[in-house]
Length: 307
Image (cartoon, rainbow, N blue to C red; front, side, top):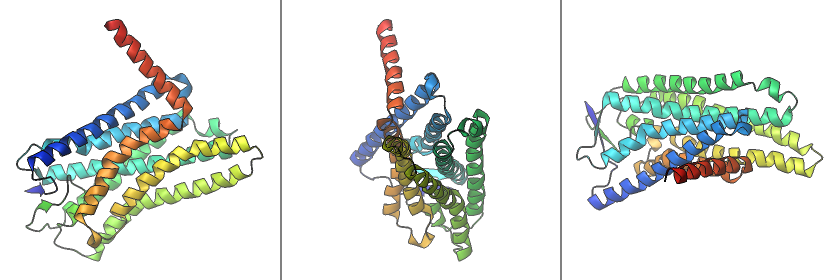
């Protein structure tokens, strides 16, 4: 039993254009996120909880894109763009699971900023290395656990004879659209999973930043307020981009599914968000820019010595 992807262009020149466009975006995603991970690991002054979480976010983004992007590239050159039910379910588990881990990790990063700004003296005692590792592992495990439950529920439902998925890869909304036994209970189950993975972390982030703003406004130093807001601005930009796309995709009834619109939004958070995250975090952060500059300089000098 197989599904067939119907979203790929029929004309060869459009398929080739799609292949080169996705390949370019994927190359930039890999290079940008690897550069962040390497810079954080090699630069001693970046061995802090904030940068540990940033490096973990980049690592999750690398695995997240690897779940679907190579599959999209390979399908461009295949005449039969099919996928087995088991492969589709596996792809969905890791896609939704790692996407959920992204959301949880952004909430953890917000908590880290709250402790740093509101309780600076207790920060080293609270945000220990052990706690940071446990929080990152917990975000991945909980994300995959919620995803596994959702995917098992979806693939236990009866599918119609029409096996055409109006998408580039397996995702909950287009696959649920093929289910014959449609009911409010099925939609509610998907909505509950999405609420746990998206809405709950988002409200936690909103509450955390409300407390941060209240604490920052009490500061008498204008320079202190500027530094605090500047520290949080990059994270807030990524939060709005990530949660905006995810909320549009998952926090709504399956009946409001629109294939073309959803395909575009899916590409935005599958390719756009992992590509923009490194840019957002480096352009507004002088420490990250300095560390990346050192890594690139060392790489250039080593290549020059080899040549």
